[in-house]
Image (cartoon, helix red, strand yellow):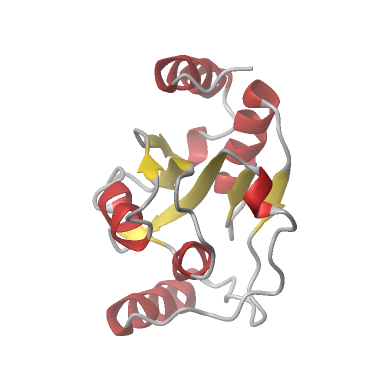
Length: 158
């Protein structure tokens, strides 16, 4: 399964690329309360949620998550970590014994604490190496090659 959260569309485009290469189902993580589209408001809300440890209420959960051996988990890098909706998704499901394959888009800061924070939320899962992609590059042909190489390196090819 490829589960992802995206506001601007960058993480969505990266998730599409991963799904095309690796196969499987996709699941879009959505919150009951939408995030603001205006950048300044989005950044302020994300900062406040992360600082307070807030997990937003999600619209839905994937069905039959227990049937997946590996779950690709995608998030934008917000304030050095995963977006709160992704944290809520990880915290509200049992990933014991599963493989989590994380990926993120960013505005220039890379993955920072994303893998470590996923490991804290899912201590009984195996967390693979993080794919980090500069957001505007998410739909470029060079990124497809990067995705294919990352999948080979993690052993997650079809």
